Length: 112
Length: 118
Image 1 (cartoon, each protein chain N blue to C red):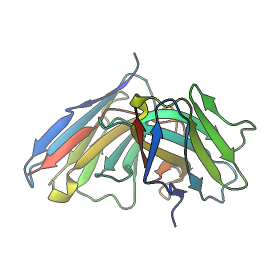
Image 2: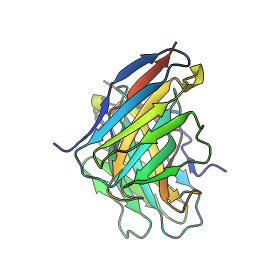
Image 3: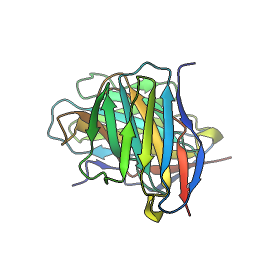
Image 4: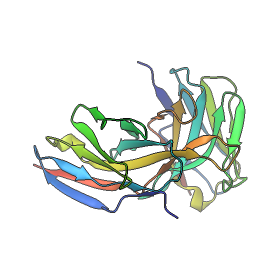
């Protein structure tokens, strides 16, 4: 089945220690998105790639970076995690911008 | 200003009954799209149903239907014959132009937590 995969499902890191979250997809979609979702809140878009074009949201902190080495994979790098970065991180894909987005299971990040 | 409003933080429904989850939206764009997603406690966002602003008929998908009232700017989700597995957070979302580079993105409401009682 075509799907969006996120690894790991749970990630624990230490304050200030860089961490990378991974997303892969078998849908062959052009667009990949990263969202941050804190407890009891709506998902908040951090950035997205349309093919190789990177689109950063205006209020996304510089601490968050992303890489998309090929169509299938996209990574979220948090350079110096703070306690406030503890959240669920959701990856989503879409055939084109504005199309229906399909989400992965998420990675729940804990910062100690 | 909030683009998507979900006024019901929590809803309760008896198993096998129907339930309506409210969503109102605000946009001046004549072309827009509205989505509903389900998020169980496991965390995955599951796409349920889509309504385009120019669609003449209300969208339906199995037990899910969307009560789209364009003049009132509402897009309520109706779940018929509720099941225990329907207990989850439900998010309404709207497609809008991003302020960055003219690309489109989804804006989510704050969600409604639905509990289905046996």
